[in-house]
Length: 258
Ligand SMILES: C[S@@+](CC[C@H](N)C(=O)[O-])C[C@H]1O[C@@H](n2cnc3c(N)ncnc32)[C@H](O)[C@@H]1O
Image (cartoon, rainbow, N blue to C red; front, side, top):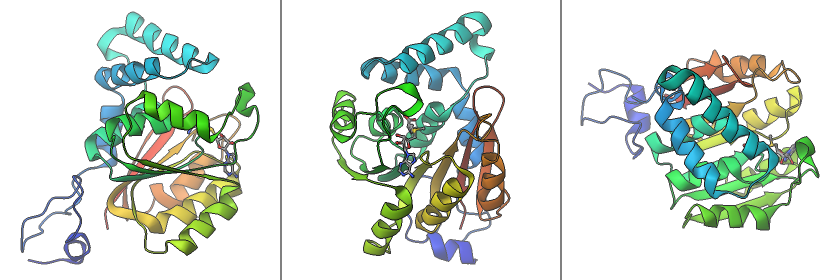
């Protein structure tokens, strides 16, 4: 039995896709948003993220985050339920082993490092305009990010594109119209229109079985982000989507089903 989804994923080699020649009773994309969200909330994932954070250059936020994770574990043990962008990225990259990764909003390379460590031979493309003093901390740019990735044992290729993503992304996709990504993280311009534009730009370039993430969906300064996500992805049948909004600033994930 052949169905349209099966035809689309026929040549897909991603770990998220199940293939049995000639039959596709269920949707071949077997990795779901819920699976990623559940792994992202586990103690083992938090611990793995903590291990990576220990390798990176120290800054105020990193010190705070490690202390926060540790306090949660000490007070509430294995049942403590907490997730954030870093645990979602770790869960996603360790489940999928992406061959390539696109990130909008790189900053100090923290989120890139999580993916780079889980999938060290990955081809990474990062977009940022390196806004000075973003969130009150230095935003040192490409050389610093390269060094962070070396620290976690990254052996793949890294291309950092500097500039406003609303210009650099369309230019990039004009140059590489056929390119598809296994994983995409949208974490740059947090304005309503800016986030919408970034998501709309990347969506056509997410591989079937690939994973899309959006951070800060319940951040008090960006309360509209959850609606932007729901509108474009969360309520779109093409995606298996899940959110974590319990603690922290909220994060959303989706796997493209067809
Ligand atoms: C929230 S930080 C990214 C944090 C990073 N993903 C992490 O988890 O470590 C947002 C970054 O997006 C960048 N940014 C903001 N607006 C942008 C735009 N229009 N184009 C490109 N980068 C932008 C800022 O310079 C900043 O470095």
